[in-house]
Amino acid sequence: MHRLYKGGTVLLMGLLLAACSGGEERPGGSEKAQRLPGVDVENKIIRIGALNGESGPAGVIGKPYAVGKRLLVEQVNAGGLLPDGWKLELIERDHGYNPQRSVQLFNEIRDQVLFIATSFGTPNTLPLRPMLERHQIVAFPASLSSKMAEFKFTPPVAPSYIVEAQRGFDWALEQAGSRENFRPGVIYQQDDYGKDGYDGWVKAAAHHGIQIVAEQTYAPGQADYTAAVSALKKAGATHVLLTTLPSATGPILGAATQLDYKPVWIGNTPAWIDRFFDPEVIPSKVFERFYLVSSVPYWGEPSDFMDQFLAAYEAYGRQQAQQDGYILLSYLQGALELEALVRAIKAGDLSRAGYLAALQSIKDFRMNDSVPYAVSFDAVPYVAGVETRVMQPLLEKRSWRIVAPFAAPQSPH
Image 1: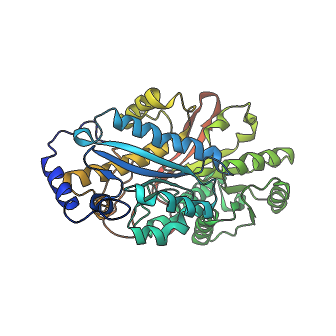
Image 2 (image 1 turned 30 degrees about the horizontal axis):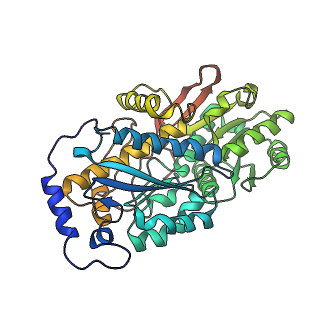
Image 3 (image 1 turned 90 degrees about the vertical axis):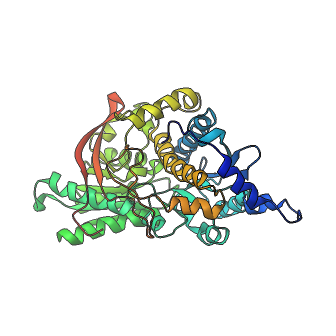
């Protein structure tokens, strides 16, 4: 992310004002408002939207994710991250992880913003695609669904859930020590997120010629998981993929503890939340055999980018929320959004088409050296890397141990 950008705004202001001048004012706003939605040229303010999931079954992720964008906006407005005094205004709504509500709220704010900085959740972003295309609005998804990369208006920030699951399978087979000791199972959420993890697990199993011994699913917000866990235990699953939300991860692992069932659990990125570090939330012994397959940096992982993030958190985020990896992930996504925005400002085009063009000029971007993989948006489907790693939570230290380094999955991706 740019620490400081120096330069004049003469070219930019001239181009923007030229684009906005001429013609009669029409009902509902001036020519400027119609041509540059979300951009106040005179006051140098860019309005961006957020469709959050702060309530509902994913609220434990949605709340900290929303904080990540808020502290980013605070940091931008303090100066130094955008050229020549440009500032951001964040227009937020909470859809509660409800796809119909997401559509309704998008329509409510679409004319007020240049782009959507957060569209939270796979099932809440997919219904927006026809409207994003119609209105030429980029929406950055809080989702690593493989479907995001297929659509030019939903650029992903990291490798997909499919890739995570494939990498997790490779590691699980190695961890088992032999094919004879490896009996893979899976439990996944009944939506597009869950299907992504399931599909990756199946692809990897087919590649290695190994049968999945148990497949269980659940509905978001489900209260009891005893039957699903009992089925995994009965099938003798030794390594189980969790394509789950934290609201399901805890109860699933708790049910397994009560049933004295001790497989190796491998979670996709959204299966974990940092509140699990707190033994008062869930007893630590529940996570003794839990691992996370993910591509995003963990809180405090050494890098210049982490230093910048932690400074922003201390200044603007600590009073809003406790330490949580989803604050970091949201902020990391913001690095990509700002990279495109700076390019659009430099190009003198803050129209929606100009922002999309700036985004699609990004190639081999490593999120300001915060990750070892590169993201590219010069062609659709977008490329958001294929390298992920496996980590084990160090509960007492509120940190992570790397048990398998970044690598691409062995199966086709």
